[in-house]
Length: 179
Image (cartoon, rainbow, N blue to C red):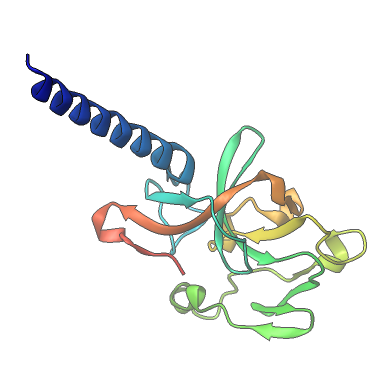
């Protein structure tokens, strides 16, 4: 091999190694794929859907997040942030006394007719001090009738949150940006 071919081989080897390293770094650290296990986020997400965890940015109210607790990963929606007082009454959400729209539940509520999707509750009855504590969030599954969430587990420490889930990519018929 002459010197020119050796340099060409070296540059290709370096490009491939760098490309593989970047792929692994992005795949395993920045945008991690996860499979939804269970029906607690229906109709937004279904059992077996595959989503991407975005580890960047802040977690805001109504974001869908993945957190780890009791050795497993949970997918839920953030309803309350630190300092929020949450009340659910007659299937309507009130945060700090202000009624909140939950458009992601509209279709599901229509299917139920006059039945309630979410039983009445208040953080005043569930949390010491009545508000979501600093360093935690209050999460609910969109399928409120079948969800192990903050109503059972209590507020979730922000340190347990792996990231938000902005995209469902599989199966293709469920592919979408999650709102």
